Image (cartoon, rainbow, N blue to C red; front, side):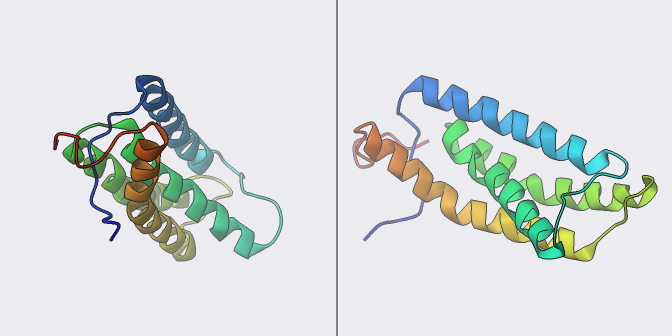
Length: 139
């Protein structure tokens, strides 16, 4: 049976660095886009929630590829929850922006999905690079 518990990240170091760079860039983009006045995705309201979920899900899932130690992975991923809530509250003080409970719920849902899918992404990356989980030392 496939376990979703994280395994040590021992694949190509270039992929780890790329994931770390992508994660940092994504977090910075989320912060900037959340605090820019009069900014929002075009189109329907539901599309906005999907973008929130995808953004925060990716920000919570990428640490599984970017960090080696379990603690670092979970700290980085779980910090997306308070970040999303704080950014939503701050939007109430920015012209043209409002705090939206639906956005906060979409952010939280995205983080939870990222936490669920992140270990699977790490296992798939280990398989791709030929790392056997039973041969990897625990972090």
